[in-house]
Length: 300
Image (tube, rainbow, N blue to C red; front, side):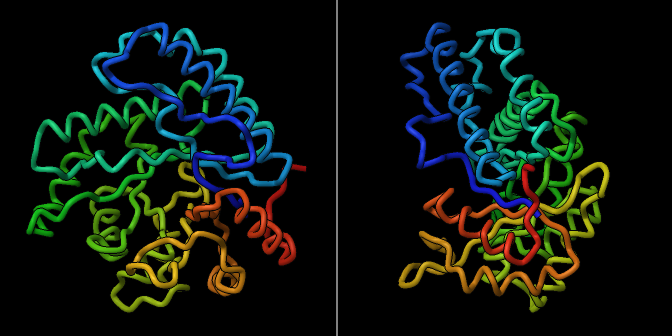
């Protein structure tokens, strides 16, 4: 299994998500910012390889306003070599990457403008993976969206919009069960209707489920991933922060709870993303636990 964390490395003195205000837009600022973000992304990936953290969620803001009409700078051409070099590095070290578009990406919105902007964002983020030369095991992770007082219509709208996505984008999109609105059961229905794989969030399933035991739920979600086209299932992992609202992620890994997950995974390959506040610090501890159990995929 690969272990990873999202977007930010707190041990390094750089950010791969630098941006600026829309009112300050200029082609020069786009060029400077993308160059800085890609250089930091390469440093993060090198750190991860050194520490056997081979799963990483790339931040959405590598290119400021990447899907906005104001951005007419030809960044795809200008940075083609840099994106390709990053992709080569990822493949060389058998890493896996993903992106998680922001929550304004809502494919099942009844607002046509929101849907249009959501698709544009998916196209932009997918194009970065294309420029890296990543195959379709590199995924774009989204939520089903809003309920809008009618679950059936909300699910139907997702199906309809998903089927209009460009094939290159559709082949990367996966849906995540959430902690309040759309459970694994809802996601399974969408998979059965349109074939979209389910990225399984273990913590969300604890918050919202229909009685499926964790081991059974994991295998249901894993069955939606085609081994060649999609790769092994991606999991999001966290646990409840004591004293906070239900669904609030913990600030650091609770080792004993992570240990408790492993029996449920017995015989199941998966790549695990830790959605935990202290990022690589927790990922390093989780990697140690997996290594001790003989389950960690390493760079060497």
